Amino acid sequence: MTADNQFERVTLERLRALEKRTSRVLWIVALLAAAFVWRQVAYHPEVRSDRFYLLDDAGRVRGMWRVRDNRPALILRDEEGNWKTVLSTGPEGSELRLVGTLDATTLDLHAGPQDVSLTLRSGPDPAGQITLSSESGNARFELERRSGKLFVLPPESRASRPDSSSS
Image (cartoon, rainbow, N blue to C red; front, side, top):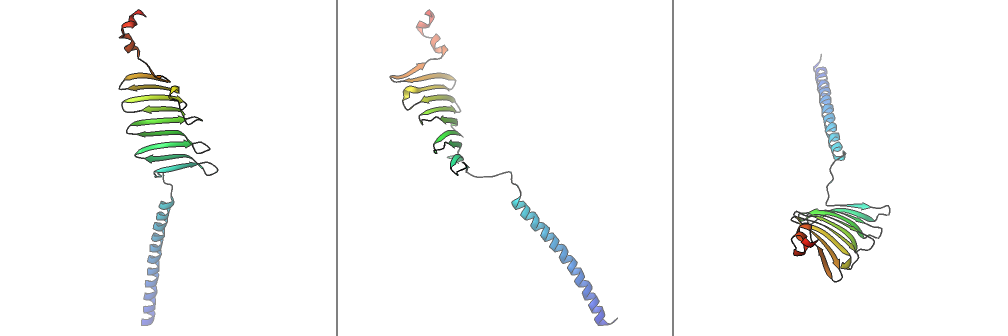
């Protein structure tokens, strides 16, 4: 065998070995790239935002889930864009407000660390407001009237009144 033939044969063997290694490296790079792309487009069970919008078929905002002043809230709106339902929570407690056809017709529920209340309003006039509340275990019923507030005392308060023994 001549030196030229031997050189060609060795060069050809080296070239084939280099092609095999290059082919393996290319496959590894291709697999890593595919894994990277898959990771980027794969399903993520977590979505993060400080605000989400609920849109109707016409593209109008009908609801919003947001965080403002460290208070998460769910707000629902009617066809005209007026808010009608608000559910929120924060350090002062949790609140639910339902608004009727008149903006002054509402039902409010509040549950705080030391208190709970239910308020019903049937119009802008405070004469149509009823409030049930309890603060630190003391229950209270309030009925707003045109001439002022009428308080209904709990049973234990009535028993201590002087005229309660005649009933």
